[in-house]
Length: 280
Image (spheres, helix red, strand yellow):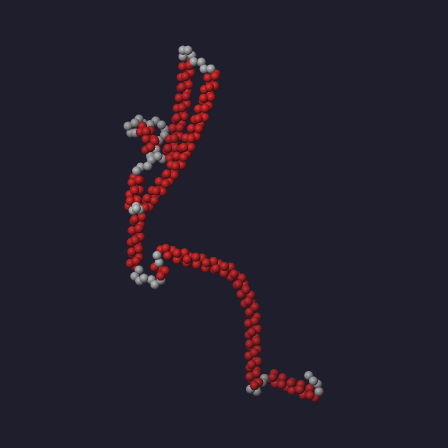
């Protein structure tokens, strides 16, 4: 059975109410710095135990590494001095031969090799723990953010429902356009289709705009060629109108002087041709 919103939110709230900490191992150490304990003499800030942070933990780690290194050196120095004095003042005195030193050096080499392997294992384990810690920290932050968003969802849903009711109340007359009453998935699909059509039209428009300069030049050339033709057409129309006017006047017996001269020249030519017997 799927959980309800209230159950999920309650479970997340219960988990977040528990304090998460990665320094549980420091409690025995930090207990020594309780209010009733002696005041700390180290130069590391005691605020790191009250308000731990990655920077304060790294500072404490470096400080304790330095302290333990000094302590180890002092311990080895004191133990060596003590063994040397016991060997000298002992009865009988302990005399170490060269053979024993060689055997001890061989054991020391083996122990150092084993220690080196263990240090490598510890370093690998520390790296793995650090990586896991960072991953857990990121996951915890994501869960906290998602929980906050989930907590705000009911109020947002209620607000959107109120807005929807208000918009429906304002819509006094339903639209005759079926596209305006589609559900959200169909509306999104329609918007996608219209956008694709608009992109296709824009593509065609850009393609046509590439041919526009060439077509403009062709139009200019045609206009230049058309102007002489228009002038010739106007002259031809004027000549034709003039010829029609003369023809009409000739039919009505009102020929002009040029036409009368032409007739006289024609009659003279005919007479001379007959008189001279010349064939044209």
